[in-house]
Image (tube, rainbow, N blue to C red):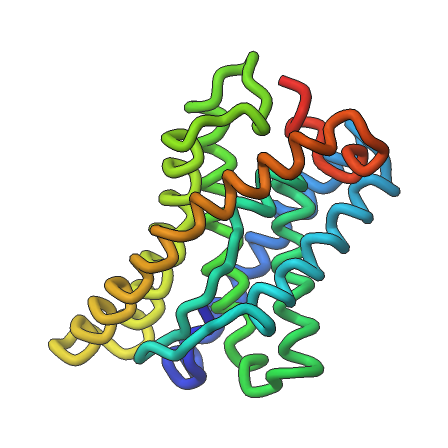
Length: 224
């Protein structure tokens, strides 16, 4: 999911800057709360892991352009489940920035657009988790149905934001509508694969529960 340069430009980019600022501001608030519950070292380590993961997901894993954007295996719900909302959000923003600064400078003009497109669905995923995951259930014990819901909300949010930016930047027309449908259809491949990746990551994390490596993950992963 890297929206192509030019989809949103000029004065319309101001709204993207506002939404990105609001998203990162909320992420900063969540980070402060996470630090209060755990520690600066824990949150920093998880944020760096999320940033490295984001870079790998976008730059290393297979990805391909589909019209107005690119289809990526973002694994945003995986980052959320393993590392927590705040580290996942800050890691996504940081990973995108590193990629844009050093590896894909053509993506930098769309940084605010892309940050909003990733962070808002992540926050929606966290909100859904608070509603559908029972308080007595650790994330490592989630069922496939639960993981599918969380991953589905994240992916649907990404597609919805891509659609919004296309219509906002380019207007509503048969061409833009077709471009959005094409991208959304291609993104179904991601929805088929990412819940399985989430379950595999949770299974791996569960095997590390009683080891020192388990400490690098979010407390909610193991403790209900």
